[in-house]
Amino acid sequence: MQEKTASFSIKHWADDDKPREKLVSKGRTVLSDAELIAILIGSGNRKESAVGLSKRILATVNHNLNELGKLSVNQLKQFDGIGDAKAITIAAALEVGRRRRGENRYAISKISSSKDAFEILYPVLGELEHEEFWIVYLNNSNKVIHKSLMSKGGITGTLVDVRLVLKQALELGAVGIILAHNHPSGGLRPSGADKHITQKLQKAAEALDIKVLDHLILTDHTYLSFADEGIL
Image 1: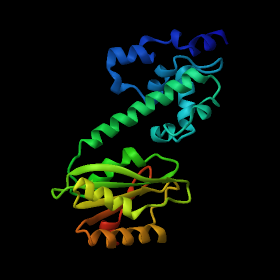
Image 2 (image 1 turned 90 degrees about the vertical axis):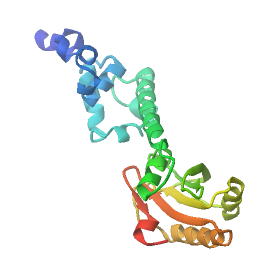
Image 3 (image 1 turned 60 degrees about the vertical axis):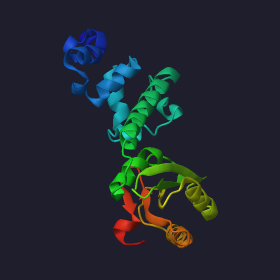
């Protein structure tokens, strides 16, 4: 029994099995997600090691780091062995990763497909738990001039001021716009309201020689493009 208890603590493991030592000797890419999280939290609890605790935490989100990143500090603290400091460390590390991913996507400055638009918008909308409506303003080369949050709402939807959207387009000298909003529910089917605001903006923009190039609905994994689906 004592032997089992002794081997349970990371400090008694072989160096190759210790996450910190493994990262230094073999590189960070060889570590599992659980081992990386174990480094963040430093220790487990009286019943399990840091790696064991990390594995258990990951199991509750189907080993999906995106889902783990959505857990609040209070939700993380529900795990035995995770207090304020450890929960905050995990949340901060995953947010850094999300922002890093976002910077890579923001490097796309010219939109030539719905996928380009998705790559730009995903860091903004992909993981939100409430609905937001954004506009991407483009010049005549389809380069991004500006991205703007137009409305923020609850799970039931948002309100968009068409006049404000077009006023900003004129001020920026934009000739094209892409509409985008998220569905926190995970469904991609456009609602009647989604189609209505698209048609309303399309009609108003046409009078100002501004094109509505697309409307994207984003979830935390994928997207639907009105242009690709022939809805525009």
